[in-house]
Length: 325
Ligand code: SF4
Image (spheres, rainbow, N blue to C red):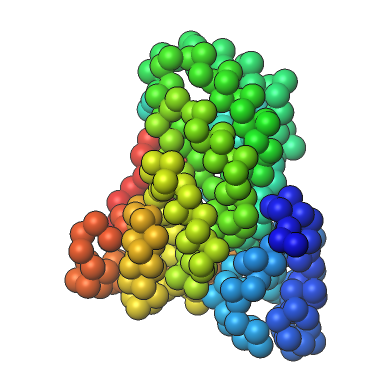
């Protein structure tokens, strides 16, 4: 019998050794970092692992999730909080960086732990407020009538169950000023079973403009299971956008990025952003220089119609908007 998404989460691979073994790779020959694993534990659902090429340590999906000794290299300008989010954190569980929008975290966990994550050191312990903390955030919304959009972001908001999502959106719906609910989630990609009947029923009950921003970095992530999940969302008229992070050895070549845009469009997902990676401590080995990034972007512009070219952006701490490169 097919496992539901919660069961699939429980059976996710949670050690680098188990991951290597599953992929027929010998643990002795690869530079696994126990330091990295302990600092930010390995977690990968089997659904995602099954899209990796067995026997290939350089598989672009594997490289996103396996802690390697490269993480142990310390670089001065790579920081614990690269976007200085703590300075925009007036209430636990909420960030207010952008005009008209606030960002909330409903949970501290994700279905997958991505080694390049800019929040890998985020203080979730003091920002995982649960239901009891929502009132302070709702009061903040009331005091700021210019806020019209709530963004739910990582930890992955779809990690919370649908009952809690219902409770949250019923309360949020009391504030007529909120027109749009945006969900940033990697779950439709890494654990497509999350898009089940119960979640689709939750969507039906939403009065908001609903946007889901999925995070897909490589066309190999997009299999038939993902396709089915996305089509179910599209049937509910959800706007679906994609953002990717540009990473060395994973997607830093034009063919991969062009294939990604085409594959996303086949699934009715629009490429939205291609991010220069945030300078987060322990992830320097993924960094791509601006020169290479701009050159790649020019190739995308040359080979793709404009609507399939994601904006190449960087987030700069303290800036009110993303910065185009
Ligand atoms: S917040 Fe996004 S990028 Fe970070 S670990 Fe979770 S799914 Fe990965």
